[in-house]
Image 1 (cartoon, rainbow, N blue to C red):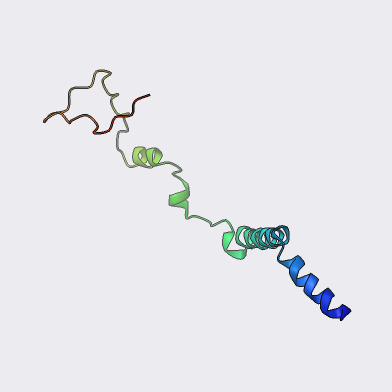
Image 2 (image 1 turned 120 degrees about the horizontal axis):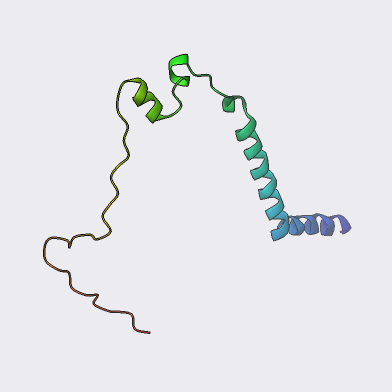
Length: 94
């Protein structure tokens, strides 16, 4: 009869939320280590013509294109064309 009680108490102890959280954390950490340090996460070498140009701008300049910044927006925006929209049906009042 003592063995039945000890077996029952072990199964009850394994259902404790703290034990479940530790098991989930352990499995998650193991999975992250496998994914981050597996053979598929090694550095990939690039061909010389790809590695020579690190950014899109450098590649464009090498191809002979002119790279210029976009013009900034005006501080005063024009009104939107078309009819004006109605106010909210249920406005929030403080």
